[in-house]
Amino acid sequence: MNKSIIIILIAIIIVAVWAVLTLKVSPSTQTSISTTISTTSIPPSSISTTTENTTTTVKPVVAMPSCNNVSLSTQSFDTEINKTCNWKGGILGLWTASGNSYNETITLTGANGVTYIDQISNYSCITLSGSYQIPNQTYTLVLKTGNRLITNNTKCNTSSVVLNSTIKPKNTTVYTKILNGNFSSGTYFGWNVTGTAFGQRPLNITNANNIGCFPEQTKWSGNSNTYYASTYSCSLNTQSQGNLTSSLFVVNKPFLNFQIIGYYNPYTYIEILYNNTPYVTAYYNTYRIAKGANQTFMFRNASLPLTSVYGKAVRIRVVVKETQAYNYMLIGNFTISKAPNQYHGILVNLSMTP
Image (tube, rainbow, N blue to C red):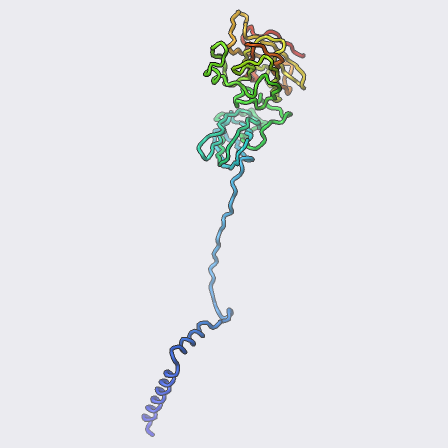
């Protein structure tokens, strides 16, 4: 047989077989086959893959510290640092230390824009400077150190501020200065008050003058500060008695200076206590001074010598065992000093223990 005819026959047979096969495989069957193939599980070992490693960093949520225990500190002067804290409301104690900086300014401002603490402190070592009623909100505490560097302070050289719930100094704490000696907090903070003679808080001289508090319709004058311990608070209680006693402080200068308005009364006087024993006792009369002037509204500068207790931890105690009508006492602005500053003729009697 001719080879050409054979080739043609083979081709016809191949085409016929292809046609038969095509007719027998329906579209649904093709889909089933395709699906079967596409879903056939392939062993992992037969697959070559490349995996890209992706690292996701999750930042931890840091809780804002409570104002009940927050602090700032620095050894740099003329600098400012701050910290934010939360407070649920209540009383907070403010502890400050100016360190080698001449002084420091502390502010506590709430999220509402109100500044609840704005205080300048020059206590070198950590000292309880005051207690404050603070409402519930978020606050920013700011510490700004002074621009003068004290190089001779080697004991406490770090400026710091601490807020916590400790609002009373320990009775045994000894301070390098008279704590709240000028009553600038408007309270007797740092002083122990007994009896009723001095009231619940110092007298605000500015407010008292504005409302005409003085019995003779004359304004008090000569005062260096705003607040003074007073047995007079726009009314006189002739039966009142009481003592006002400072926290312990170290006598590192020879004089105690202060301001006073007072009458002579053998039951009203100022003491310096060492080991709870009077070492210095003084009686004053600013009503009638040596020149004979009767100025019951004028503050006078007064001084007490501290040489007998130099280097010791002492307290100031103001004693009022009796008050009389229009014979009252105003006293404050206590500081220790290298030199006395006393108005002439106001000291009636002074006794000292050697």
